[in-house]
Image (cartoon, rainbow, N blue to C red; front, side, top):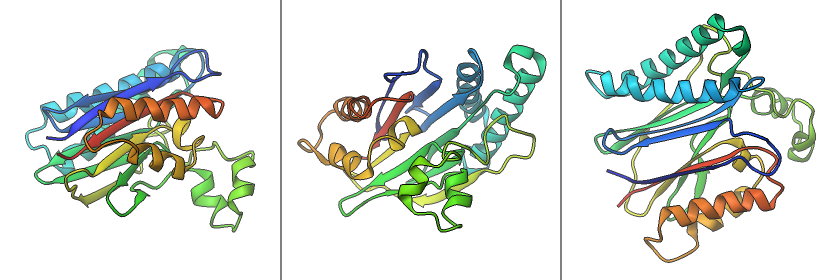
Length: 240
């Protein structure tokens, strides 16, 4: 079982928080979503997606890679169904990233641009790849990072829960954590605002075994200090 903590903040600009996360250590399940849509639709989409994944994994006969992918598909189906049944929710959607412990391995599935990172003794690196215009179009076109940071298409996703029935899920396996290793799952209110070097420094700072809540608060404060233009959510896991 991993040690886990999740914290969220609406940031300095947005009037509400459309991020939602859930940690279920007894199931080995950790989920985060960043909703989008008018009025309260983004909040509804992110919460519905996260709760659906949790319910689906709880009901699964075998908690394995197939169960995780089925849970993501079910989240998409329910968000689409809710939007179809309520005109006020039309067009709602959400990113979704989920991690599931299976034996000595961590499985991760993602849709959109909420990310999972791995911090070990040697490096800090992204596990997931964004399903976004920047990652799938801008970089292949050869645009440099400075141009991408201000490009008008920089916030456009190429895939999201609730965007359509044809869902493409990015899936990652073979992630094995050694004692002290951490996995950070976060919305773009953190990774899109705070430089990776700063995120790594916050995670490495402090004595070994420092409470994860302190590290999560440090990440949120760094995003707020950088202007907090979006909701900020961090889910942090650490291997004992």
